Image (cartoon, rainbow, N blue to C red):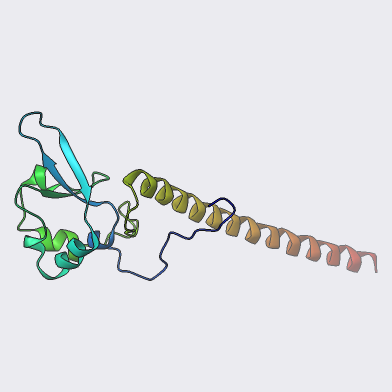
Length: 151
């Protein structure tokens, strides 16, 4: 696929809640080793989470944020599941990144990081442009003052 532009991001507007976030995951701990097996919720599970959040995954799974913002396995509270994944806005206080099927967590983390860096750079560039316009206006008025002094 070299040289081919591939757009993997869907640009549909979506509410920034955990159910729409790529980092919403389910975790199961193996009994023998205690090792955590972590999986992203698929599209069907996410749709089910909107209608029946308490039945979205099997009992041996706990839901969590893969970025560590919250974890049912630690809190032990599935009563709050609807509030956490469907009602709490996650736009500015979390690592929200829109869900993309078949994308791995590491790729989503890197793309989320790049998106944030690009937004910060745009903001910085905006301030630089404003500063340049102010400086240009000051130079223009300074030149006008000098012209009127000499006349």
